[in-house]
Length: 317
Image (cartoon, rainbow, N blue to C red):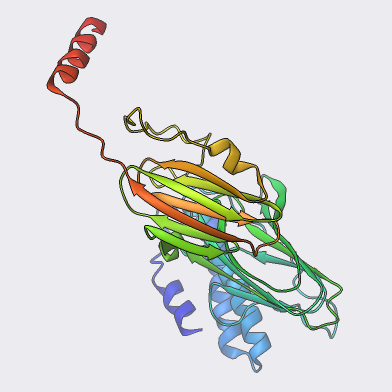
């Protein structure tokens, strides 16, 4: 509650400022009202509910001020007379939790607004859990495919693109012993990729080196995917248009297409042109993998090559 109050106070939103439009001021008043209700709340549930409303108002306010799509919170203001609204907040800003069977829509609170993020998902108990990314804004409503669809326990990390605004969590057949939690973390929280890296299940790794060849070995029994996300544009192949390095002729072929639609065990290579992120995911979330990284020495362009390029530029002019 204190942290939220400090964040609202730090806005420095002047009523005569260039971005103080009526809709922005309405969001600001909603955040102030939520803080007041949280401060006056007599139960933890009421305080967390008020903070949820205030956090949603702050997310909308930030989106309006910076020209990003404005998310719409589809949850009703209450679940009915005498029944409290379903609560997913824990008091920790970027963590949502739930239990039992049902459908829960979670507003995504990004640590770095306007940038991709990591989802740390944990689920225990029986039954199944299905997590989908959703885009629900004033201009667009769209539901993506499953981030995870797992029976039993699950512990893993997933890459969250910049567009989704909500997560839809559905649990079934749990006999009320299903427990789940989702933490939204910045990309900087990704584990650093080691030169030899073993693991299992879904993971996001940060590669911080120069041009290299990644060897991917998988022991899997279901569909899986390994992809590289460019650290410069934060896009994956084939959307990334950043110029590649001048790979030597003896560098192994790039198996991007095979890695995007893998099935079962395999041995593949992937070129890493620059720092970025590796996204590893599989249908069951528990298969094993082994990665090795070999740096590639790319010599600087020769003087003759530079003169040739300058000559071609001169002729174009």
